[in-house]
Image (cartoon, rainbow over all chains, first blue to last red; front, side):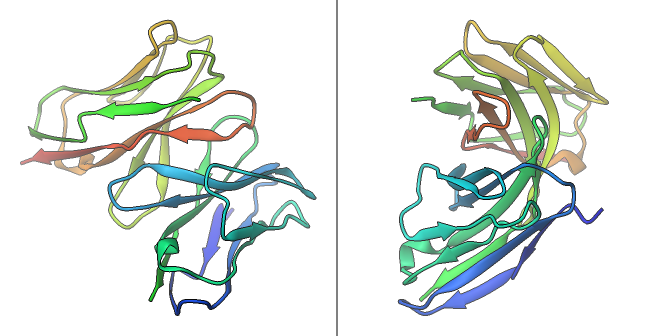
Length: 110
Length: 112
């Protein structure tokens, strides 16, 4: 099993550009999450999904969108990138207990 | 609204010392609590998961305790090693599969 795979690992965007962060898990987990982590801070939940076709907002959803068309994939879309979205983004998944994380995607908006 | 706090934000100890990391939460109606380790530039790795009905969990040199009534959890690391240097985060969940709410983490440095 590859676990949770995120792409890209690094990306630089210009203000106003859009992009999609990809997340795939091969563990057949129902629950998937997107977090962002800013320096010296804990993780803030952006969006989460309890299964294919079902998504919900977390603590900091503004400026982001998600979709969950399959169990495996949970892409995060950034529309009109802003400097405030410079962060490290983590995707995670689980069944009910232990949470498994990807390696993260480091995004810089200039 | 649940708030999770970890104190101290940073801790430096000499190799071989036993140490305790603290995690507190404001709403005691949790489903489970999880401790994670994060190395610089890396993702989070799960260390221990404690269900709300449990008092503690152990894995090797790590022992995590949970006191729901007081809203506290501790992570005990025995005989610390330089390889234990990392940031340790705790997170709570209020239901099965529910979102986790994280503390800010404690950055641990173990000096040789």
